[in-house]
Image (cartoon, protein in one colour):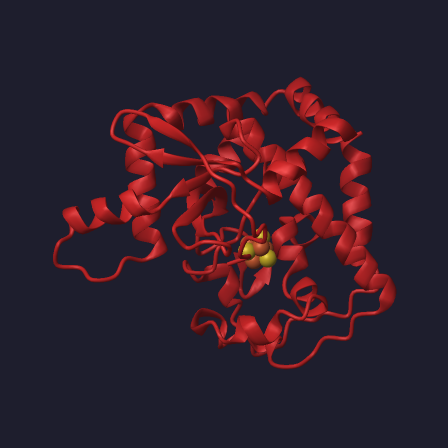
Length: 276
Ligand code: SF4
C-alpha cells in the first residue's frame, strides 16, 4: 500500500514536468530560514524509507515544529512541521532527495503558476530574488491535472498529519498572546520574525509537556504497523472528508498559555493558508 502510494506520487511528480531550476539559482527556498517548507508525516515516512532512517530520527535531525501565517486572518498562525534551514538535503544548489522530496517542494512554483499566484508571490520581498519566478513555466494540461492531484494529496496529508499529532486537522493558534510575550521578553525589539515566534512556541510547548507527547506520536511511526495504520486512515473517505472540512474551515483556535493550551470556538471563513 505504501509503495503504491509513493510510486503514484512519484509518477505524478514527473509527469510532463518542464520545470528546470535556472543555472543561476542559488536555491534560496532551500536555505533561507524565512521560506517555510512544510513536511507532513507522509513526507517523513517517504524519506525515511528511501534513506533507511527512522522517522523519529529524521524529524529530530532535520525538522522542527513551527508557525506560519494564516492568510485569512493575521491574528492567527498555524502550527506545522517545517524542514530546518538550510535544508540538510541541499547539496551544491541541488536537492539530494529530488525523487522523494516533500510535496510542498514538488509543487513549487508550478502549482502557484497554474493558480495565477506568481505576481502576488513576487511582491513578497522574501521571494523577489527567485529566478524561477521571473519567467512563466510551460505547464501542459496533463501536467496541470497532475499538479492539482498532488496538491489535493498534499492537503489530505497535512490534515491527517495535524490530526494525528495535535488532534485537529488544522492547529491554529492565536498569535496575540505570543506577540505580547515576545514584547515583554524583548522590550527593545520592535518587530519579531517567524523564527522568534518558533522559538517561543518551542519554549511554551516544551514547558507544558506537549512537545514530548508529539514526539511520542512521531516515534511510533518508526514501527511499520503504525505507518500502515496511518495510511489506512488516509484511504478512509469518510474520515478524510471530515478532516478536510476541518482543514479548510477550522472551527477551533488555540491559545497557548503558561500551563496549558486553551481551545476556543471560532468560525474561520477564508480557508486558504499561505504556502510561505
Ligand atoms: S527537500 Fe530538496 S527541494 Fe526541498 S528544501 Fe530540501 S533541498 Fe530543497
